[in-house]
Length: 79
Image 1 (cartoon, rainbow, N blue to C red):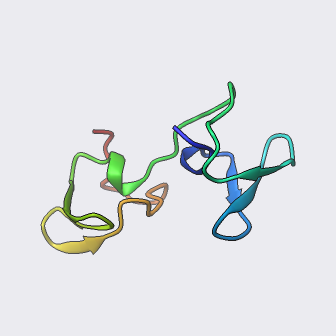
Image 2 (image 1 turned 120 degrees about the horizontal axis):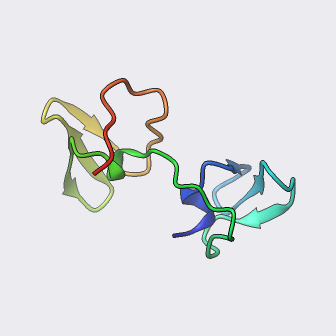
């Protein structure tokens, strides 16, 4: 897993972000640190079905992006 998949990652732009815990600048694609905590994203949900490399369907009803955060989704369930 990479920093971008951590719930403590705050995106600044496409390539970098800030760690909410340490306030350090980090690269989104770097390997995660020891404090990594996986954030709920559509790609980790049992209701997500990938239809293309960067696109999928949620419950076969709505378009969803794999890296879309699902923290507020009432139907999210870990895959």
